[in-house]
Image (cartoon, rainbow, N blue to C red):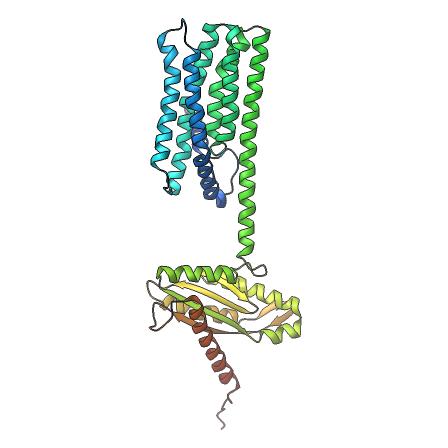
Length: 396
């Protein structure tokens, strides 16, 4: 029995923890891990664009609430809901003006999105209390006023808060449901019809929020796929020339010690002519896989085109380990390649330059590549001479 009680307690705590984490998340749907930062940045961008409009609506609502509740009602009921909403709206407007032009970090963007949840709770609670009190004390004939204003709030909130969908859910539900439930439970037929209208408006706003969020995630996923295809070599899955040049240029611009290794496959053209282009593509794909799996210290591995590849290393702590890895890669690339029942053997020539080790190495990306290229062809010529040199055998 004690074990069962302990298990139930642990399960309850785990469930509560999951619920808290779920509502603390800025997302209302499944977001791939690789997209979460971009989705969060997009949500923050949308909040920055539309939140001022919502704050102005909140100020107008605060005035409308205060004016509508003048009458025999207690003074605190006349002023408190509108004052709370107006204070929050004014505070947020001043805060946005003070932070205008600032670029938030990822943590600050997440905090701002979560902050909207607390704001929505305050504003939604004020709306809900106002609508409920107005209906219960002003009578059913005056129920059209809060119905109209709260429906307007739900629709405008759906347009302005799709960057923070959880905040939208809290704001709309807290604003509408107290009045709608009261009208359903104690109202006449007309009040029930108005309550149904409120609930339908709420459902439409929430559905719109979910659709907007899914559309945003889908759009960002498509953008990521297009960006990946624009910077990835289709055959090997490595970075392409554009991505390689961008990486190299950024590193040199920042002054980061960098080693560049160019690799050219020796004998690939002959193997391609002998075994066919499909076999050649299979060899290139295997080369890419070997480079990807064995270049553990590299910053980037790229196929520049044809049978030419490149590796970029960070050599801020020295280049000895990078040089050792490059030589190990050459050894790996010279191993046989099984292709369609045949064995293809090629070699690899290297051209290596390092801005951190050698003096006189240019910091311009194109000039650095040309320097590495000249060393590559020198290495290729040396390997050809070594291969064609006569081997002397000892006799007797």
